Length: 149
Image (tube, rainbow, N blue to C red; front, top):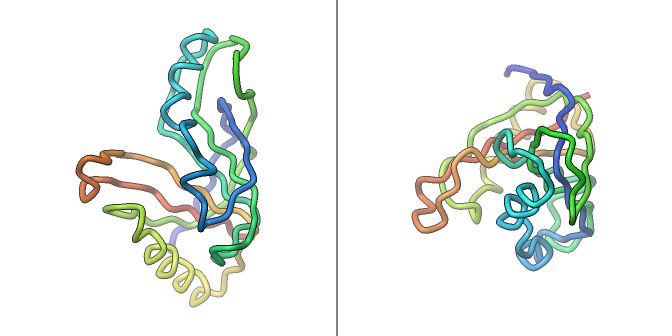
């Protein structure tokens, strides 16, 4: 199991309180709207979206903080959302292939491996949306990252 470190990353960010049960409603149109807001703000998208799940415990009803972020370059001022720097992040990861409604299986396998290797989790997980194809969800690829101490 490889431990990796993500260096700090500048993102156009929208932070919301969410639950896993109501995730879709909490997210709203933010993922699609990021690109429009970046363009209007003089910012250039520079990578796949990173979402930070802070204090999510896997329980569908637990409220947690979700920070949706689009990596950007440039010095523009956003007309909506905010600019934030995600901090450096030490993690283990796995690629989830397919629809997001089965991503819990990938988390379960990754957390099981993490525990077998004697690693302790932090309160943060991230998802990096490498390939999004909602019309053909079997093609989607999401990097699941679980923070380690």
